[in-house]
Image (cartoon, rainbow, N blue to C red; front, side, top):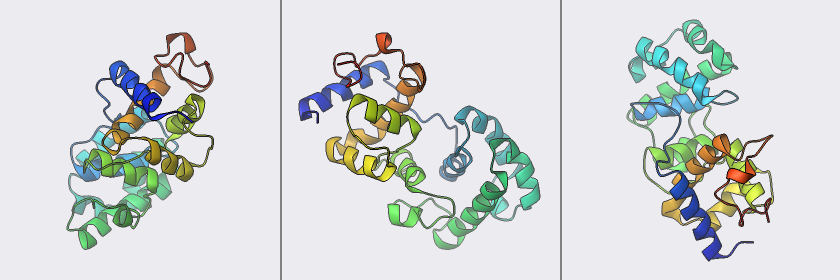
Length: 208
């Protein structure tokens, strides 16, 4: 297990390498990020970013999404995969946001998990990016990198979230996870990690 000083060093090195830890999903309204995250399940962010402009132009308000014809919505999001389930969840979540949350994305894990199609990963994304609350978004990059680096020793997303919450400063946790995504895409790739170009040389368990 890394010491607090080592954790802080890892954080600083990633901050230097990736000074702007923005979410790759594009959105303008809070609920748009929620639905983009739902579409991103088993789909690339790049693909989602080509679909959501069409989706939100066709349905420019929550009310429009809640009242959408499901077959038409399915057609728009078809390329994202699992389109029937995703369309159903998006329409139902829009209706629940209107009926239960005054048309706003809730700011607690408990309430976010009440929304159809929303799990802890998406809920944490909303807490961090929309509400600026401490959050740990455990996606495939976070699972891979946190294990490779040596921060955790489990592939279970909820256990990883719990372990990272213990060691990461709350005000750094959300951005840290975004930086793991960037580092995972650019350097610490799944099949061919570019270890010689890694900013964490000398710290990463894989390289020590």
